[in-house]
Image (cartoon, one colour):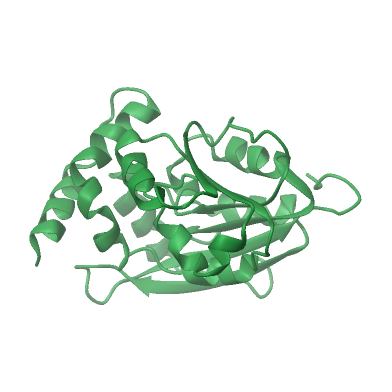
Length: 245
C-alpha cells in the first residue's frame, strides 16, 4: 500500500464530519487528501470515460460539470476538449478546486467556479451538463437535477455516472440487486457522505424520457471480492420545450 493510499484510507475510515455546512464538511474531509485524491479514485470511480463517450461532445459546444472536484474528468475528453467553446467546472470544495485550477491553468477555454450545484447558473444556456460521482454527495439532489436541466438548451444533454442500488422491484430490463447489496452499499458509503440511492436513476429517467442508461458493477480498492453497482445515464431535453416531470 502506498503512502497516498494509506492517507486516503485513514480519512475514509474517519468519515466526513457531521457538523457544519455542506461546504464546510466537504472542505474538512477533502483538504487533507486533495493531493492524493485522483490516484486513489482512479481505481474506484468507474464509467467516467464511458459517460464522456455517451455524451459525444462536439466542436464549439459549451459544457458544465457540476461537482467537478479536481477537474480530472476533463482529461477524458482528450483532443475534443480543445474544440469546445467553453468548459465550466463547478464545485463547493476549495481544496479540490485548487487542484482543478492548477490542472487547467494552461487551458484557455476552461473556467473554474466555486459555487453550489443546486443553484449556480451559467450566463446563457449550455449544450451539455454532467455530474460524475457527485449526485450521491449532494444533499438536495433533486434540486441539482432540476438546476442542471434548467441550464440546458432544448435538445441538450444531461449525463450522470454514479454509485447506486436498485429498487426491490425495478422495471423490465433493469438490473435488480439483492437485499444484501441494497442494504450494504448505502451504509458503507454514508460514513463518507456518499449516499447511493435507487431514486436517482429512477428520477433521471422520469425527468428525461429520451435517454440511454447503462448499469454495471466494479471492484472497490482494498475490498477484495466485492463489486459496487454504478450506472451511466445520458438524457436529452425536448427539442420543442422543457423536459417533462
